[in-house]
Image (tube, rainbow, N blue to C red; front, side, top):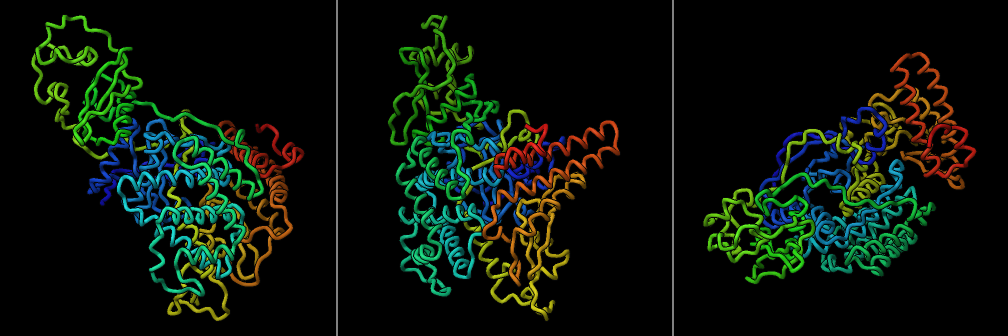
Length: 640
């Protein structure tokens, strides 16, 4: 496979969308990604891609997430498809440095189970600003849907061994990190680990790891590298997480994943289990809402297929073709049933015509007004519904073999636009308006969960091995260039200090600030790269007040580097509420101080900027941290 860059488009992710939503100009430079076109795909992948592409009017956009250049916004092995947030586009986001044909097929299959098999769960979080909670919902949906997706990928003849290998690597990394002393720092991360284990258990059931008993791997401590050995160790080392994984597996097996109803029940049970585990139960009725598919049916990808029909009817006809599995170029013929509804049949590769199927949204076709005897002899056997769709010039003369001959014989006309091509790539240089438009939803998609687990486990293992390199890490593993006579961690001598070190290794994630431990000392950090362009100085100052209030809520080890969790006995939600009160009281002072110096539009923009930030944090106080009414009323006046 090869990939050619066409241009660049703004494609926000969930985090940048939540952060930039209130800004007058939502163009975040970090969201400008290369849009690419595919070349030299295998016929198997090309057929699957085209067959799926014809089942939607949305343009297919493919971008490279560039995780090596923007680690705070993307991660290695991160692949996803978002077909639901924008009315006129489907966004495929791939890490092209770590791509495989089957992974592309996996993301296409997410569309397939939505468009063709009608199995997608259209529910999404009500509160998108709580990105961590929203992401957990989306990951659990992807975990359950992946069961159905992998079945489709297998049926289409793709190699699933890459999924098994990524899963094995993730479990192996997590096992090694656990044996080296790693424990998930938060319960939401423990949920992610449990989903990773649950996927491996389901894959074992499907036979993806059946050959590992005869494989040999380099031993690590008492771990021989096999999936079975790893799962046994994890069952004993992290029993609470393993038990959670088994509960996820039981939920999927109990309900099944054959249709939308089964999938939805499985997702519901997994969501309830996960959020009860994190200590913040999810109300399925109030915290999720269901949206109909977001599609405008504007782009006609096959103008010569069923000419004169509305785009939506053509899409429905192609969905029928896909469900029947007759191939992209199967000949078709039309008819009317007794009630006048349009029906379509396709010629199966075995040589038989399929049963006629009614095409939803097909145009109403009245009876012909011209005498039947006035038609050319070659057309008289055709039903009126078909004849009325033909141009007048065709009705009055013998059709050419490349046109009406197809209607008589069932052989499709040979028209250049009907020759299989890659999915349409229209000229869309800037998609930010679509994501931030009135009809858009927050950007969200279905992730390649094996890649998510692999990335997370790699990061944690590398942390345990220190400096993400090797157990021998004296002087950054480069004693020719560095010395370390005092044995201090690299965070202590890193250019820019411990906070810059945390950012360099990606531990800041998408957070605006946090506490860092470096060789026994606590450091309050603000990661300005995660702030929207143009954030006012007072915003930074007050975020520093918030993080400083947490200094007494954490403990640091005497040596080494980490981002510490709340110490034992500390109620994290209560401490966050207390810090937010101080935070927003600071906002009021800084707003008065900064905005009072301005006049006119500049002053209005200043007040608007502070108000937007304040209301975002107030929503977090209410929905995420469940702060008391007294705390909210004290600092959130004017925010809904």
